[in-house]
Image 1 (cartoon, helix red, strand yellow):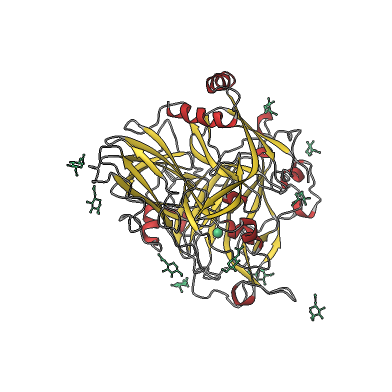
Image 2 (tube, protein in one colour; image 1 turned 135 degrees about the vertical axis):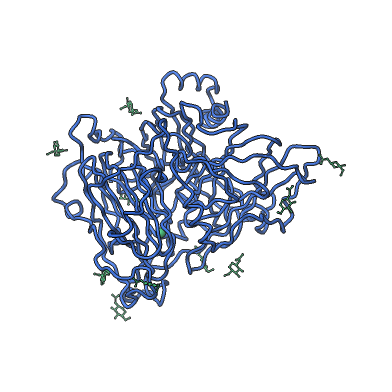
Length: 578
Ligand SMILES: *[C@@H]1O[C@H](CO)[C@@H](O)[C@H](O)[C@H]1NC(C)=O
Ligand SMILES: *[C@@H]1O[C@H](CO)[C@@H](O)[C@H](O)[C@H]1NC(C)=O
Ligand SMILES: *[C@@H]1O[C@H](CO)[C@@H](O)[C@H](O)[C@H]1NC(C)=O
Ligand SMILES: *[C@@H]1O[C@H](CO)[C@@H](O)[C@H](O)[C@H]1NC(C)=O
Ligand SMILES: *[C@@H]1O[C@H](CO)[C@@H](O)[C@H](O)[C@H]1NC(C)=O
Ligand SMILES: *[C@@H]1O[C@H](CO)[C@@H](O)[C@H](O)[C@H]1NC(C)=O
Ligand SMILES: *[C@@H]1O[C@H](CO)[C@@H](O)[C@H](O)[C@H]1NC(C)=O
Ligand SMILES: *[C@@H]1O[C@H](CO)[C@@H](O)[C@H](O)[C@H]1NC(C)=O
Ligand SMILES: *[C@@H]1O[C@H](CO)[C@@H](O)[C@H](O)[C@H]1NC(C)=O
Ligand SMILES: *[C@@H]1O[C@H](CO)[C@@H](O)[C@H](O)[C@H]1NC(C)=O
Ligand SMILES: [Cu+2]
């Protein structure tokens, strides 16, 4: 089986002493899959720039974790550098094991240099493609990899799959990413990346890069499953393969109603599984380019380059076109094509069959409406600020710009530190001011924000709706909002102001897409619903790292339920302390 081979390969890399067969037999017997991640520097060269890149086990992208639905997963993370770190298992529900979720200062204190922490969780009632990544400062730029959960039941789609191809998008910076992030102090925008990458390779459209091109060999007349992951820090992407349509069958490890499309839009934090049929008569070279380029909604300087890879049909005339700089992928949308992005998102629906029912809450207990905003603050005295008009950039939700506390919110919650300022304050559940949020120049005379770590606290089992309202402070922009610990359903989306008296009537409560990250339309809103039935403290944030750095984030607490199996488990012994 494909999965076993891939897993076998990963395990072989990780544990060189044992043979692969022994490891597989061992893990099958216990249903516990064990991995060892060493966080370490590795010299890596791209675009003729050699630098020390932060990696897991020296690999870029990092090793694939492949497990089966129902498995327990233990990943021993050893921090072999002098910086702090944490790892997040993006999209894994972590039922009762919030301690293993990973975001620094939300569910744990960082793993310090020289320390080890074992993330211990089980993967239940989930199947498909997810990914893992560092959740400390901007380390996720290179510290990421695929997390594949093989289903116990056959795939609910056909035809039979010949092979699986992970496609991980990322960005490459010639500079040290810590330095790029460091320049954001006093509110500057970050430098753009130098290249986009497919599985760590920028491809031939960049200088000195033709040799670093992703080329996937395929047999003609077969069906392949592409497991596409956007691990980029700051960029929504379009992706297409020349002369081939893509059939979407799964998003964020939830099956969808299949549909064919010339291209996909994928935001950071999202995953998309597509079927690709090698049904073309190979052109004389046998090479078909595939490309990813940004979906741009920001007015700020952006990496507007294109990463290119190739499908290479096996055949007598296969040759190498990778050095041709002129290759284009005709079906890739224009970088500003919001119409395509909107139509594509509209087509995503839950599979919603008896086997895979859509568990969207039909009624809600609570509706939280929050703006998502960029902000500007005056420059501190005697500083030079590099944001707009000499001011500092920030970002906020309901005018609260999130400040990471100096302790773990989860630990504070668990220890009943309700008296502490941090845990006793309440996140505002409505925008403090209502205006034409996405109109021209809304309140531009004052784009200030407030700072803090106010929490939304909900009882166990709350059917929660969160309306995410974009604003055009500075500029309206597409924001991929990620919720930890829960999948949600996107019941509605639109442009302009959300209206609680009008829009709920148009919600899809039958087969809305289930995700962990929603790309909120630029200049619009998205309404998501979830059942808050996973006790713990959970991060909600923009998956554009640039915006999270500016404070576009919040945390929410789900209280314990009444049953013994509805409570947060005690913290593991090796949980790092602050
Ligand atoms: C992981 O959790 C399980 C269930 O609580 C426990 O049996 C196991 O010992 C834990 N593993 C480690 C390495 O702590
Ligand atoms: C960011 O870009 C500016 C302008 O090109 C350059 O001077 C600076 O060194 C860059 N910063 C980093 C960290 O590479
Ligand atoms: C691929 O698409 C291009 C542009 O639509 C077309 O000119 C070309 O003939 C196609 N090639 C194959 C092998 O289908
Ligand atoms: C990318 O941006 C640069 C600088 O703004 C511009 O000169 C260039 O034409 C843009 N390229 C594309 C492909 O849009
Ligand atoms: C391979 O190339 C030769 C010479 O150009 C041509 O005659 C032949 O038809 C090609 N075969 C395929 C399968 O395209
Ligand atoms: C700012 O600079 C002025 C003049 O150089 C100096 O008098 C003042 O003390 C400085 N203020 C701070 C907060 O450093
Ligand atoms: C926190 O409070 C709850 C309810 O009052 C109690 O059951 C629990 O033991 C307390 N936990 C700690 C760590 O003090
Ligand atoms: C909000 O602003 C937009 C753009 O300026 C305008 O088209 C729209 O009519 C305004 N909506 C309301 C409710 O004023
Ligand atoms: C946000 O808070 C700041 C600081 O209190 C205030 O000046 C500003 O008017 C608020 N903005 C909105 C949109 O509520
Ligand atoms: C790592 O995290 C700890 C706990 O928050 C903090 O005290 C320490 O300063 C951090 N170390 C570095 C090198 O950032
Ligand atoms: Cu954002």
